[in-house]
Length: 473
Image 1 (cartoon, rainbow, N blue to C red):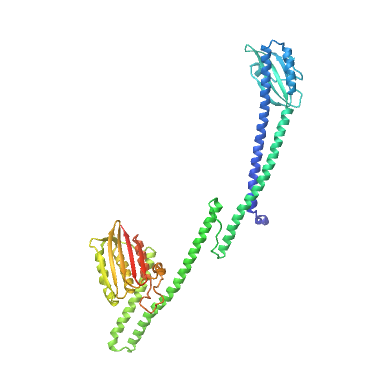
Image 2 (cartoon, rainbow, N blue to C red):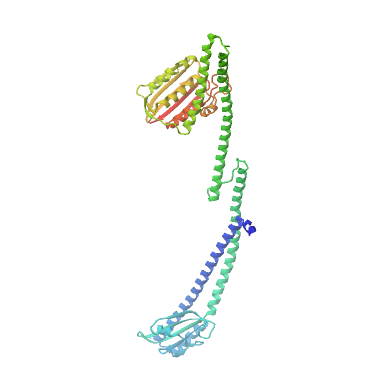
């Protein structure tokens, strides 16, 4: 029993046998119906022929001046060549005129009742009466002024009709064999084609499961297998994109860990050194206040680093709730200008505000300040002896904010990377103030998206950078 369960019935044989079985059943049904139809048609034509002769005989007997016997002899000769015969009977069923080779009448009581009522009797095939192999016969009533006075019985041997039916069936059988042979070949060919297409998909799937994500199979929209191949290619493309993203994230994670170690080591080393110096009285009294300030600055730097990471994770997990209101941009720009003026002076930069008093933006106040602080601080970091301009204007259904600097600019290849969480601007310059984390701009991007807004950056090396933020109303 277990062996039977483990036996496989290949898909190509399933396809082939299903096709052939359907074709065989269809052929059998059609051939039986066709044979039955042909047989009925032959017998009906024979019966109609007999009826037409019977009516002609009765009509000639009524109207022709020639004697009845002469008419019977004439029709007997004609009908004999057609392998037909006839006989006439009176109202009591007695034969009074029989053509050559005419059979004796043997009607049942029900048939006799019908004929006496003026109805025509048609029997397509009869193998019991008349003592012959089989006949087709009709009985027509002979009416005189609508009064039954007798009738005429016409018969025809079935042998001629049977021979015709046999020949037709023989041709039908040959046709079925030819059609079956062609169907057999086409079924096998189509089954092979479908199975080969499925095999290619199976082989491609095996390659993907083995770790090869650069597989592509021929696809089309012709049928479901082609659409499946198309979906398979889309799946592989997405896996490739996901793997590249995972690899990129992994590289960023390694870089992030290296940067965290570097950034935290410096302030922690400074804090530890100052504390040890204060503890062991190794720092002169006049330098103690400077050391304490240094510890405070480095501690704030660590707190900022931790807060930025926490903010980013909260934004990504939709834990930030916005309280939107109409905010005057001029007021916000002046706050940014005031808060960052000292930082700008250290770089010998100037911050200019260019916005009309009647320009408002619908946003969360705290998050808008956070967005502009991050972008403006980024501009100050990368600008020395230059200018930073904050612009705002109102357009139809949107408010546009621009932050433009005259700094060193960004390499075009790195423009899209500045939004990545672990991106570190100008990595090669780890000893200068530009070597800080790119978390601020990642947070900016997420906050703008939370406002259903858009943010773009345009930059050219040596000519500065412009950030454009659109808040849709």
